[in-house]
Length: 318
Image (cartoon, rainbow, N blue to C red; front, side, top):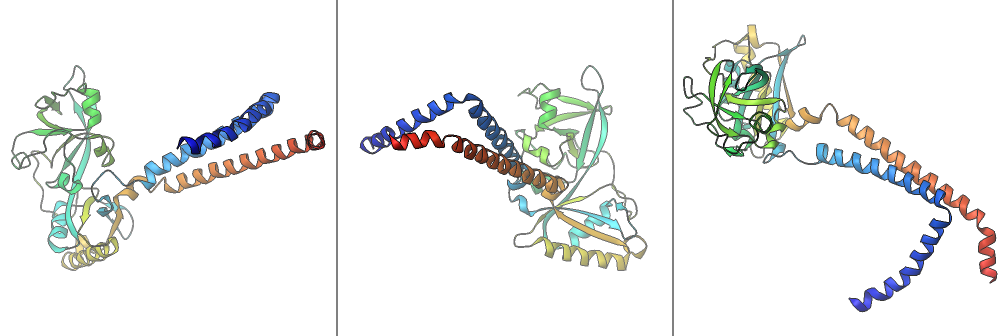
């Protein structure tokens, strides 16, 4: 390796010295070229890093491409919340999903500390964490008893809540927090990646603590359903299956289900769908900026080369 690399370096050193002399001879020109390239390359690299992290990389969940979000609208327009009884019908009549779960968020008051603070709470149905295939970073998840009506009052907290309101205390498990006047025991801290489910939720609890589910098809609580596709099932097949089931429900319950339209999209699209086009547009803009910068530098180098024709001719003569 030494015999191979040393001749290459020996031949490269004169070129490096010549380049340094040229740069020192015209510092203004050299600085202009360096700053132009640095700005263009920096902007392009930064934009590509954003696109890579937001659009290209998979979500931090196992087999995240199988995660789907569902909602339904009225044909006349307007989103409709999903009642628990309709979710039960979907679970019983479809075969395209490995699991379905829902969660509901609301703003509550946290009076654990010295002063009351507003926090977003989410209540989810059993199996919600299993659907995402994720476990708490500290502590544990809910037991079956804790997810039953009248069971122990327990809560999971987000990584952000744990750091900002509990001081990132590694002994936080078992501490009591007070939400809307009720005391809950913290049994686990969710990992930072769980913010991909909902970035603003600070406290997670079992579904609707101390609140029964009504047997009605009109008013719903859930803005959407999260599902995991069964192995080998495509999103198009799942949409067709769920649409067929909803058509059956429309025939059985025409007053409440007749004009409902099912919407199903990959979970990642609900996160980046709105900004996807803008990100690619910005990436195209900075790429064009890099191209223009390279073209301008090439033009500057050509202009500089024409100015050195006399110098080059003398060198050739000598």
